[in-house]
Image (cartoon, rainbow, N blue to C red; front, side, top):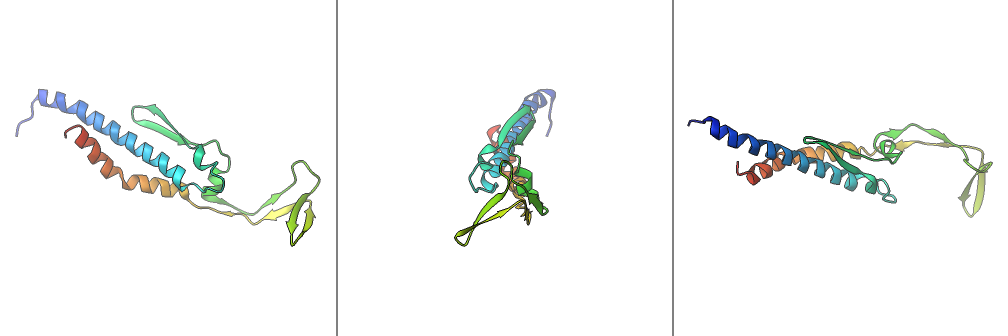
Length: 137
């Protein structure tokens, strides 16, 4: 088999487009996974993920929700203090309990970011094949 310069000149743009398509499919998959795998008490975190293309082969996915990493990584125990009142109020057994501060036991991380990445990575071979097929390679 012989490959000449004309063959390469035709092949290189197709390979570049296939790489770009693979990147785009992987970024979209990760974005979707983050929305799906995020803890969804109210759905605020799940709906907050933003996918932005930064260049031909660079994209970022992020959120402005402050507790996103705490939900992923967990936290040590921490103190809770009232923000606007003089004390915290809790309803317990039909009555109320007041406290100046409470020790929260911490949060166990769900590691949804790592799970989202792993799920997207597992599909990369499929995305490569799809992109190559679209380019006729």
